[in-house]
Image (cartoon, rainbow, N blue to C red; front, side, top):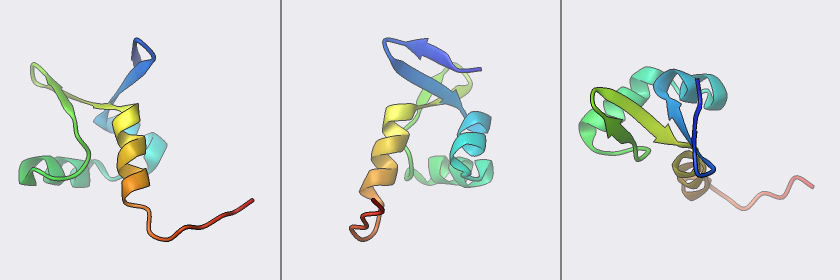
Length: 68
């Protein structure tokens, strides 16, 4: 389930895994190590902002490829 707040989608770990093909275990390990995609903690729930995921991917893209 995606929660919409002011055009900012908050995605669960499972949704991030399904949409972006990132392993949930990798997301968990990165959180423990204090690296990786920024996340929001609401109680015991962990959510990722879609905008943060997109920024993270853009920052970690190697090379300047143009596929047009």
